[in-house]
Image (cartoon, rainbow, N blue to C red; front, side, top):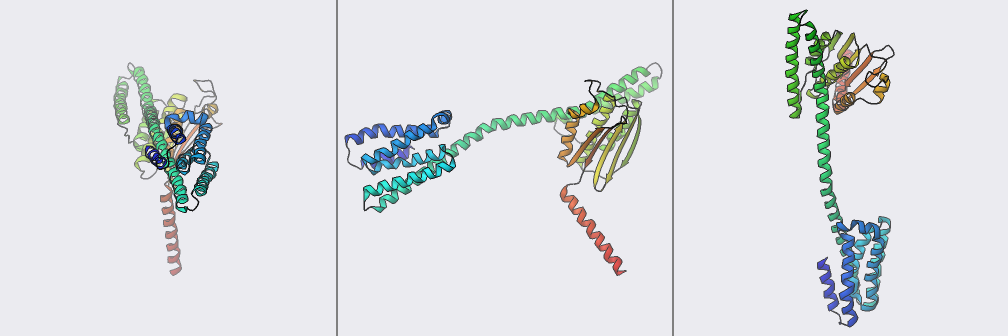
Length: 384
């Protein structure tokens, strides 16, 4: 802007100096530049939002009126007005207004210059280029400022996401371990006098669970966690047995990816925790099966109370209102192309099913392979 102002002063000094010219040079030019700063500087956003149309009108008058009396050099400030129009007006109004401004400056220069078409072209191109350059630099400055302001928001969002991850991992991992430790501790306390050997076995199991809980905490702190569904199935049988719940397991699945294995193991942990904490179950059925390329983990248990013990609500209302653990599981499954289904049936059984489908590209490859195999078999049959 300083460079353009110097060019404007040079053009004015090239003409005959008169008192009106000097007065306007000392008053109009600084006022025009001041208004342009209002339309450009980020710190003037509130002022632009409140008085932008009036300051734009004032800048337009200070740019277009002096050329009518003082000659064509004063029209060189038209590019600044054009940039302000592009910045402040809606696009559908800014482009026609900018076009009219360029045309008016060209006509004014043509009427004064008479037989100097080069001057007309110079004024038109100068106004057009100056307006586009000033507008582009203003837009770039505003975008840069917006990026700097967004960095704080991005950092805040990252912190919130990390807190949510930490809370989710603690809930899903430690909830199961602490519930199992509590249950086995109560059992060991009851067996101290009646069956010391059984109590000793339960205490050893508690030590193992405590060590596992400690490992889980360390893995959460390192933002790394890898779990095995088979290991959790074995642990679930032990915990359910200690709670006096008759457990029936069915395991029929192949190899799982590391992410799918960890997610299903986490689902099983949360499900067993809910069985122990939120029901009076006597039977629990767990099935881990693979079918049509998808792996499903189903957990069902009886003993669901008519009303939620904590809030006095029916189980259906409790599920509809949302549950932190179940919401966490649904989010985890969504990350590995999986779904979660939870319901309380009329017979008093709670059903939880987590299903992980193969990625779309793998499913498409498997379908194409099956089709090719079927075609080859059909062709071989025809040959035979």
